[in-house]
Image (cartoon, rainbow, N blue to C red):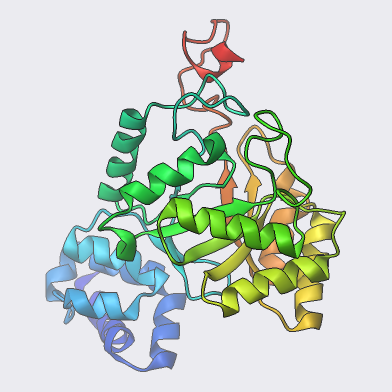
Length: 321
């Protein structure tokens, strides 16, 4: 692109950064062109060569992320809006499923020591990740406990996502009572109080139901979750591992009951497991839900450590299983 044409378009970019809402929308549509201009040799001739950093913070638009990197050298993780909520989460989140050694349940043999988990946690925070995803059942509650301890002094900069549905111990460590699991009002309220206690916080940013419960009417589940939001114990609600029909049923029910609705769905999605692309991802797009992905590397299978024709490395997940 010539210097002359860059100068011709530059005022539009200036209006977009400093102008009104319609100008910002214009900038969003044409941000690819703007990035090209700002990274060109002519960038020094543009009237927005050094926009103040606080302006970019206040605008907070996703389309400004490449511009921020160009001007400030900021290499932190990109922030994205979660569904239709006002929550801005990092494009990468930290899954805490294996935090806490010596579990006797689902992840037996593949959890990390407290020291190793802490190193991962600290590195994630340093890289700009602002969402930690855990669950009441992960390592029999130990994952939530460690997450809560490590959040000390960092709570304002980090978001907590946790879950309810299954009994702590998965019925392996002890026989759960009838209200220690499921999505009834009593079970949800009890699970939330337990998570708040272990996480050492007074509010959960994203509270997710771990899987649908066909033994409880969706109306009861939604009203219980809605009450938690109203009480200030939960900011937003989401779901995980839902079938397509249950997801849509839940969204319709929330609309009918005038309760808070699920703002996100967490699902398994990777180059190996792509079944979510049939119904769940299109549904999330249609209804404006955020998508949180678990096992994006397919339990490490796509990490590069496994090679065709070779046995799994000693101590790896596939070696254990």
